[in-house]
Length: 93
Image (tube, rainbow, N blue to C red; front, side):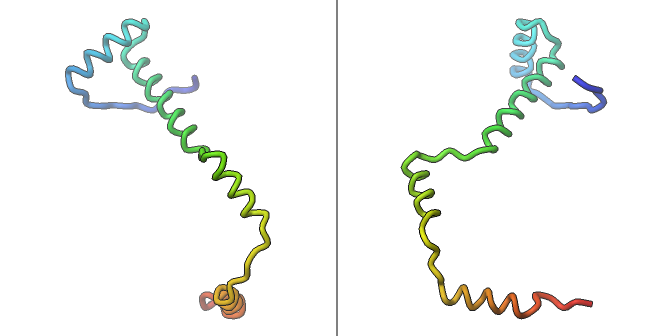
């Protein structure tokens, strides 16, 4: 579990606090341990949900097909790219 040096405080309305106390008692845990475990588990869930993107299989197939296509040159974009490469973006001191 590591060295517990950080502190967490929260204000809770009485009804929620009673539910938290009840649930922690059902699990045989202190309120503090119950809240920390619940917050940690939720944090892991949120992090996992943001670690990947789910898309329908047909969308994914179209994406892969588009990546396999030969790129199309857009003349205006190519010209802008050449200008940027030829001219410094900022002055050097």
